[in-house]
Image (cartoon, rainbow, N blue to C red):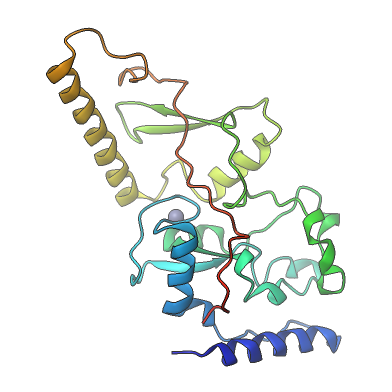
Length: 245
Ligand SMILES: [Zn+2]
């Protein structure tokens, strides 16, 4: 088990490397963020769900990992020296499933590439506008509509093209494959959840209501534009008090 002292040392080494103004790529720090203490702190903040696709996670599971929203190595193709100074920053860490982590990789484009900050002007980081949606941002209720259908992949995500966040939502869904491409097990679980929901609704209707379906219940054979994706919003500013270790 890593100690907080080890994390402090690792952070100081990264900061020193940037301050020394060395060229090239910064060295890779030890992955204290993958320790069980760090994972437990992240679960306490965001719940036991992937921050991107919201699939249920197990605490100790080889298919879960800790993702750096601003990747350690992002932007290096442009002589940028990455975001390693945020490697141990709680606001940059999310517990995610392995599928999302691999799909995202070091992908981190900005709406305006000229906005990308470096260590030297890191205080301006809030001026960056990432193309990917940040899981800790409040999710606009009218940005994406969830439509049900009987055939594969059973649920469709439709982006409102008139919403100012449409480009970001489209890029996020595509990059993280939230339509379900390559996510066979995830889709099976999602279909089971939908089947369970409709069985429950049907049972309630049979037990207590012989009339027509209530207006809030979607017609399974026809997409319901009123259904919205579930969003487990959490504040990344509700940070654990200790370092990731
Ligand atoms: Zn995921």
